[in-house]
Length: 416
Image 1 (cartoon, rainbow, N blue to C red):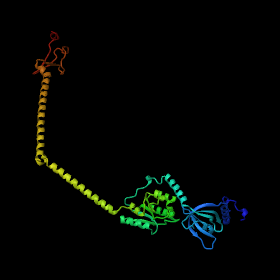
Image 2 (cartoon, rainbow, N blue to C red):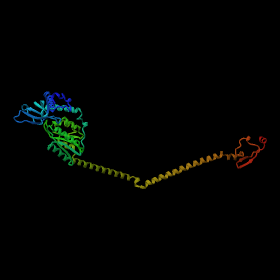
Image 3 (tube, rainbow, N blue to C red):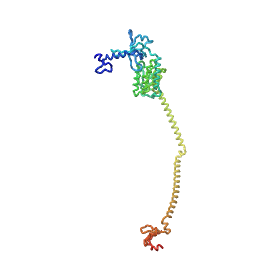
Image 4 (spheres, one colour):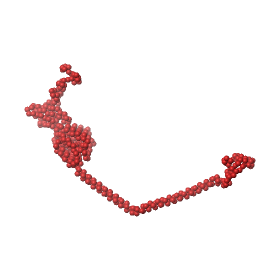
């Protein structure tokens, strides 16, 4: 395929009409060559300078993420610096990006290099501090309480450091049965942020780890800079497990101290914060037991005195007196009940007699005894009118002492 028949742009390429690798490499090189020289900041993680060579080679790494580029620089530019740079130094480099088509690598061709001044770093840290504060990462309300007795303590520290020894010795002295999950990582240099963040995620994922301590001994301002890194600070703020910061001495205040759930002035102080002192707890338990025993004794004494007071009352000295009193009350109530019942029966008897007399006064028998009689027809109906009676009709007459039959006389006689 000739150059004239190649697709003009990357979007025009297809599986049947691809670019040769050299074409892509050359186009990338052309694009990079058009870039202007620029200032870039990073941290030196590797520096190679051999005697007799006009150029030195170094690896410049980003201070926040795991990303690096190779840099070549004239040795004269290094000699022009006030102090020779070393591994871990933070520098700014004026360089031109270059792309090596044969190896397909990108590197920086440096012309100048400067140390990042402490004053500039302090200004950046202050700006970052205010930014994180405005986001609420330092608010006391978001800080998680530490458990009283963690099932397991997570410890992130350097390998075989004094900080590790101080934390472990303090934890085991205060609570010998405590278990510590240790992650030994780089706590100085370019790998610190990535190593500490990775260890933090590992410990935060363990269910039995109830608190995490990040410990490092004292050091220079530059040595402690990784613990003010924004990526590490945000990783601590997002951890679900309470985090204790024990970085440097009491006067050192990296940004990690502000976002951590507890700031310990020293690694020894961190050990005292994450586990209780078994001697203090035993003394407290003994004190509580003594107080509880004394309280029980006081309660027993008070109840005995109260019982003695109850037993000294007259009703308790003569046990039959209370029964006699209740018997007297029962007899009194029974007597009163009988009297009330007799009165009620008398009143009802008088009332019944009056009703009987009234009934007798208005009864038909009483009327018959006064000489009246009841006259009925043969079918038993009462005669109420003289016109109802026929001549020679057999009528029945009822008187006080029996009844008899009669026949009426003629109508004229009746009329008379």
